[in-house]
Amino acid sequence: MTGDSSLTGDGARVGGSLFAALELTTGMAKRAIRLSSGYEMPILGLGTWEAKPEEIETAVRTALENGYRHIDTAFVYRNEEAIGMTLKKWFENGGKREELFVTTKLPSYGHGAGQVEKYLKLSLERLGLDYVDMYLIHAPFSVLKDENAEAPLKRDDGSVVLNLDTDPVAVWKEMEKQVKSGRARSIGLSNFNEDQILEIINNSEIKPSNLQVELHVYIQQKPLREFCKKQKIAVTAYSPLGSPGSKTFFQGMSKYDPDKFPNLLGHPVVQKIAEAHKKTTAQVLLRHLVQQGIIVIPKSSSPDRIKSNADIFDFELSNEELKQMDALDRGAAGRIFDFLFVKGVENHPHYPFKSELTQ
Ligand SMILES: NC(=O)c1ccc[n+]([C@@H]2O[C@H](COP(=O)([O-])OP(=O)(O)OC[C@H]3O[C@@H](n4cnc5c(N)ncnc54)[C@H](OP(=O)(O)O)[C@@H]3O)[C@@H](O)[C@H]2O)c1
Image 1 (spheres, rainbow, N blue to C red):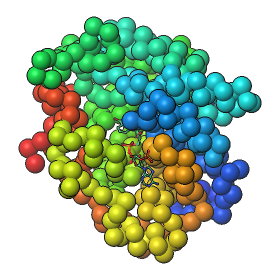
Image 2 (tube, rainbow, N blue to C red; image 1 turned 45 degrees about the vertical axis):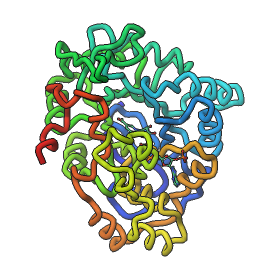
Image 3 (tube, rainbow, N blue to C red; image 1 turned 60 degrees about the horizontal axis):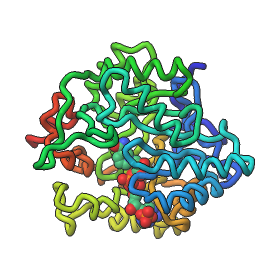
Image 4 (cartoon, rainbow, N blue to C red; image 1 turned 135 degrees about the horizontal axis):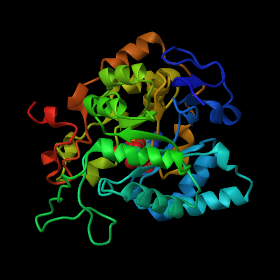
């Protein structure tokens, strides 16, 4: 299968302004981006970072019951097993594997020789699946693993031990083997910068079909999106709501004081647009992205919020409203996930945001 990354589904257009009036429950699974691998990736997915295993069953079940067909996880989220148990019940009740899109990610301590296959097999075992729809390299930098191979090796001062013996192209070659073996349908990258993506493209047999990066109104990634469009790479926005949960998670490890943590959901421009459409600010933030053909993976463990975050296909932002939201972009300064919470990672030659550190 071949194809561009383009939006499919009833009357939807990439970069265009319209979704035809769509019926939520029946139409949602159809709203998808056609990947260069030939597969379709639903434009809305459920994020699961920091969703506790005991919350996952309710979250994933609620999502599936409300039309989500895309679940985003990672080896490091430590919830693949809980997701797998929930999916098992869904399959037992008639849910079809081919209707589901599951993404997981290779941990940064899994870049060594032979490790890609090992970690993907572990993820598949935990998820109870024969294949994942998308396997991403979680980040370009690499660290050594601890004795249990389930976390980075750390020194007494909390800093990670960098692995300087791997390079992303070698890891990508191992990723390609996972497609050939049928363990991954599509492969992609996360947290790579433009130069790093280009190096992979120039040295690949199978091109990356998806890039997952932080993307929301404060960091709109316009140059990177433009680059991805040319390269036929579909873009997934992580932290599309500005990751409000990170405010407490990153306390003491982030460039933001908790009282200055970005509050996208409370931004007056977003609030005004939400009032005009009788929508929540979360719905407006998500709509701003999907209307531009960007895949979104909002995380919630609350059934009400999971439902309402999916209710974004029955309204349209005007060009003026899109313009107002575009103007909120702070570029790289809007980044929350600089990964400096991984102590010492900025010293890795493949740390992707080096040029931002001196700004
Ligand atoms: N590749 C990477 O390196 C990377 C990095 C970060 C994230 N991700 C992925 O992207 C997903 C989303 O990013 P994220 O979790 O950082 O941030 P997010 O989706 O922007 O925000 C999630 C937070 O917003 C809250 N929330 C959700 N819906 C809401 C609503 N309608 N109104 C008010 N609050 C709401 C959630 O709390 P409740 O649960 O209480 O609703 C949670 O605290 C992750 O879960 C993960 O799957 C990937």
